[in-house]
Image 1 (cartoon, rainbow, N blue to C red):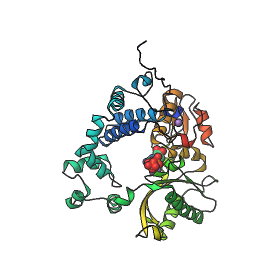
Image 2: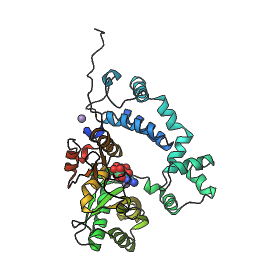
Image 3: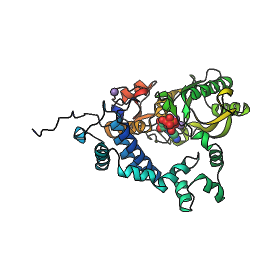
Image 4: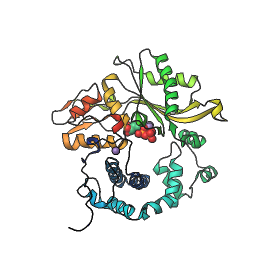
Length: 363
Ligand code: CTP
Ligand code: MN
Ligand code: MN
Ligand code: MN
């Protein structure tokens, strides 16, 4: 009756872990805008706002076609008033004034530049900005005392901020595979993170390491790291030992969200094909995690991401099922028992969710 063409209304489930989100995004200008606002909120230590923008962006990523008008979004979950205002302005004018002014702001640019240094988080960047440091040059000139991670991060800044390709991830996988099988026969590695979700590039490479016999994986990380170091493959590494068992003070204690696996955050020295570069190698961020086989399904689910998909799984578990999910275990708060799982599929079943394959966890 209004004479306006009727646009189809979308219908989408509330939790990202109930939805299939492939890499195909029909609303990338909207999701890029909301992601920038999310990033800015996170860099300013406003976690709640950050999550709200991330949820709104994730919802738009799951839509089957491009949004043409806000009327199509009526009744959808996850879209707060602020996000809707940004979406409406972009649909009507092509850009959002808030997004553009944020992108151009000195503070946002400085936070991005400084947190682009491996080992520098939002808090450190904020302190430096208050001391008048806005970029790498000013940081180098400031005489600030940097820790070992930050010194390595500054040294390899350009390499680390250049996206990692799938081919580079495969090349690193071959080396890590050799390291792992050399130090413990039968030990296995699995590619996790964004590459397992089918992304063609990433900011790092993530591997999970395990052994089919429970207990054989104990002490594995230092051996893998020593092998890689002896072969000259590590420019930096920091290994943290497993503290999961220490964290359990008795039956019935739900697992915390922080995972406590033996892990290693490192910078890998990747040899580069001679004809493709003037240089013999480049630096790539590499994360390694060792998991006992009994927790492997939880570790794999937890380290595959996306970060928002993981957060939504935990929210679903807690709010809808009365369960606590971590990268180690699933705990049923009502029954007071841990629920075992040998595969990701079993975890989704315990949670009462349809199985979502890794390639559709790109929320
Ligand atoms: N993760 C985690 N604890 C950390 C760091 C990461 O549990 N301290 C998990 C994240 O929740 C995510 C996975 O490890 O599920 C991979 O994290 P990350 O490498 O940061 O993100 P990716 O999705 O791999 O994205 P990118 O391609 O940019 O690396
Ligand atoms: Mn599609
Ligand atoms: Mn990653
Ligand atoms: Mn990582």
